[in-house]
Image (cartoon, rainbow, N blue to C red):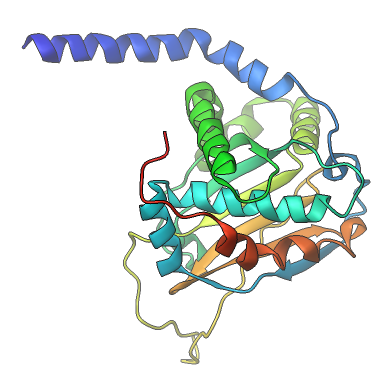
Amino acid sequence: YTPLIIGSVKEFLYFLGIIINGPRLFFEETFRNYSKTHCFQSTAICGRKIVSWSKEISCDDLKLKSRRNQQTHSEILLSTVSSCLMNFFSESLRVPSYVDVNFRSVAYGYLFGSNYIKNGVVGIRLPVERPSMKQLVQIREQIKSTQDTQVVTYLMSLIQIKFDFLTTVLPSLWLKLIINFLSRKFSITVTEVLGFNQPEPADYFTTYDAEILDVLFFRTPQANTSMAVTIQRFKNNIRMNLMCDMNLSGRHHLISSHFSEAFNQLPVVKHTIK
């Protein structure tokens, strides 16, 4: 029983550390190091929205790159989003080294209203670079850092999504101030809707038995959020759907139109990235 006892003690100490350091880490990750580094944070929000979407990529290609690079699907897709943002910022005079994005992974059943597991939200400091091995390593490091420091943030967002706890407990004025601040810092949201492990029918039909050939899903930007990116799968294809504020129109298509090209430019290796 000695290994079991040692493992239990280590797990207890780990969760105890989360409870003790959680408030400090939450404050540091949420409110520290805030600065307006790019146009998405400084653009005045007019309220009207504009949409665009990308060409499709194959799920098989995503799985192949994920397997050969020994990376998760989320890491590969975040790398693609990073390259798309680089394509957008390269048209301006100043390219930020990173952008703070609000990331959430949603189960596939979310698209059609079926039962699905709800997940929380985390903030990721996404590097803005062209596709390269360096970029892939940086994204992996940022995700690892997020997993170590944002446990409390994830749990709080999960409780809010499931039970509306924060909106019930906090005064409306405080809640409005917090939402306005966080949506300005994390002015880009990225939602991933994949669900490769979930069973699905070969074809989808409407109530009137008309076959559904394709689906476009958009998440609406809230508060001061300038742009909402959705990486969405339907059957064996994946595309990027983009909804942003009207004040960003004219250049917003540089992000979605670059999605398939950025994915094809990702390097593929046969060894594990350390």
